[in-house]
Image (tube, rainbow, N blue to C red; front, side):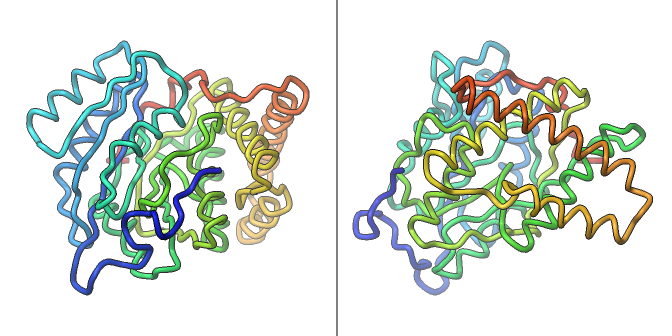
Length: 318
């Protein structure tokens, strides 16, 4: 696990001087994200944060063979804050994150990572930054809202999954999709398949608190097919298992009883959800079984994973 000491961190861990707005560098890791990248960059460039200064937007393209690089270059010409780093070969998201971290000057106080397949609501960056007024906060995470249709079972499962995520995160933050953190981490472990969770572990090591910025809304799109759902959840569970073995850190949703407690609380309020809850639980258990076999039996760590195509259809107007 890699962190800078407080003395060598560059920016102070405490907030900047009274009245000063922290500078933020946003990183977007890209592999064939032409379906959403233009809208994501438009949303970031058009937003006018008041709690921070958006210093730069760094697009790291890793082995993209679609129009992602062309889209990023067009935005680079329009807005001087947008820069692009091209990685010829795809080596995993963590390796791309490290390229982004290496590009951020020390005088920039905060870093943010925004998934290339989400759309932030207006003001999301402000909401992500606000908790850093507390010097004990090292990392924040947004509130993802799925745009899947709910006229079929899998769509309802995706919505239920994120509702439970939100319920759990309000008690103990579980951060993902869009995060911000103090610029005190020079690099993360390249072998991790769960970069946000690995950052959680690093800030826990620094004795710094994670904060769930539930007002920072980002729209995402969950899998539309069972195959894509299983591929995604299997990979995430394998990554979390690897993280626990590597660091001892467990994310808030790691223990089944935590998820079960949240599910029962939801079921108590709406008993008609029992069939959906049962289907969701069975599907998640199957994914966790496959992920466990990958890590514990096969010794496989999915640092470069197959893309789930149906998750690239985010619609912020839903």
